Length: 104
Image (cartoon, rainbow, N blue to C red; front, side):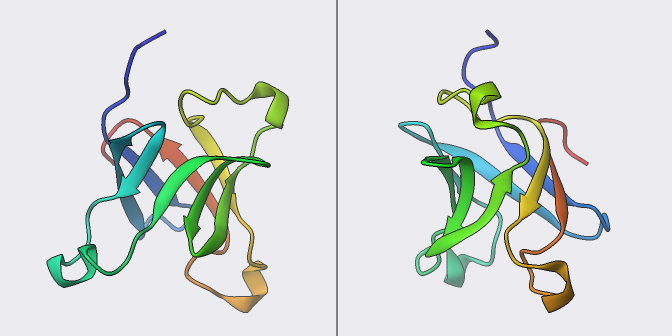
């Protein structure tokens, strides 16, 4: 057990998109790097839900790509995550992602 994780980085498979999540308490991480005018209005959260670790902006956008039985409620799993939107729709949340504790 490494204790509380610091910032986490969600990197899209194309490498061009990186989202930064900061611990917000109670097992929740909040997307923290966005323009100041958006921080108060847009809440993008990473938390543990019925299907495991997920990223939500209103609805679920990205899920940890690991069996629920291998996920721990205390902290999000590093490694592969998957957008729930089909890639052919080309949405900002689609495709393959990697969650890492190291700044890319």
